[in-house]
Length: 161
Image (tube, rainbow, N blue to C red; front, side, top):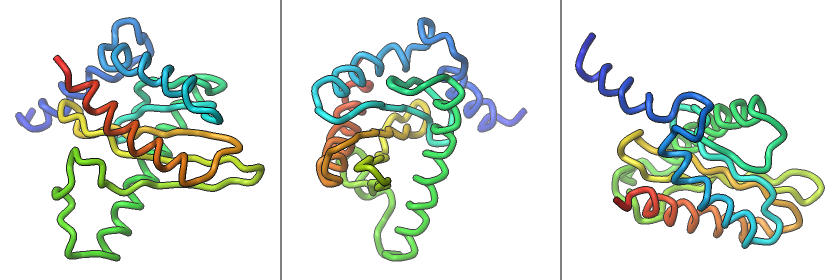
């Protein structure tokens, strides 16, 4: 097996599985996600997945299957939005704003005042993560703001040694 493939498998082995008690990434992220959910009125669920769609951890969803599906869909939506952004602004260097909170935010506005916002969480050991924030009865701009600042803060939180 090639070394680059082994490295990919090794870095993702840390986030696979459902036993969050032995998953260091989930154990580090869940307390932060729980605080965010309880401190920001209207946020009812938070999901964290890898950039390739693997579910890491979540709170506020119905079951593990929903969380896995949502993580996969979040990855696809975030990747598609990034590709569209590159077409709209081809002069922008995609590596320019890493870790500075200026990455694109994907937002979805649903009926009944529900909003979803997706943000990139820089985390080099697994490439990057996708943070999804689900809210009701909150203005879209507020959810986007909280998703962006939370992604940056979560990246810093996970980076602490």
